Length: 272
Image (cartoon, rainbow, N blue to C red; front, side, top):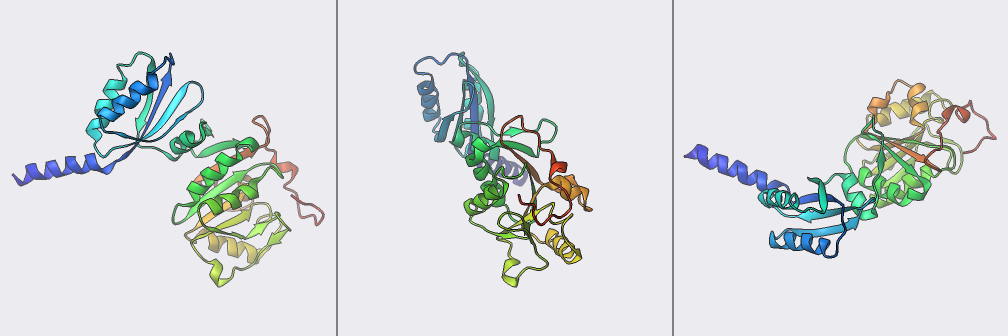
């Protein structure tokens, strides 16, 4: 009897654990009343609609709320009977799902590397939102940001820090002036800080004291963002596999990020 009760408890826990879902379907015939029919279907199942938006190429995305997975299973079967749509996704929402619904467009990822995401300057709002969500994570997090000079890398990091309600600390930078720090103040060793590191300044244009600071910081449980991660990896003992996310920012989709054109030895007249 106790075993039967335990099984019931486990099943109940599984049903109650997930309460937010992402529904995405592609429209083949956007007939009048289609959305109303789907909304009525959700209403009959007592599934709440949190957010709804069109998402590129006749696709619609919805964030749903229910604590009953059986209702989601029923919904999946019912949606499969509607002739004018194809169900793409019905799952626990990922960060990219939430951003797609909020902004009405997908974030482009690298087909070979699931942790690499691509943005262009006209998507800075989505990029800031993305970074804001990423920076909310606790503990050690390493993010690399690729891009040519003056594309908006540092500004996006600062804005993402603001969105995540965290402070930011420049460890090395060319944003306002060429900065290579050899130590941090006691109050800066805070896991609520986002530490900004320029991969070129911290490897090619720095000294041993700065290297020691970087190594110490890499073990500190907080968010670190490294601009020009490929140079950082090339000139240090770290690997691209150490990064949790790689973000690429371009002026246009076809722009090539050529790091060797600006990763040269220190020049006091050089600015980024």
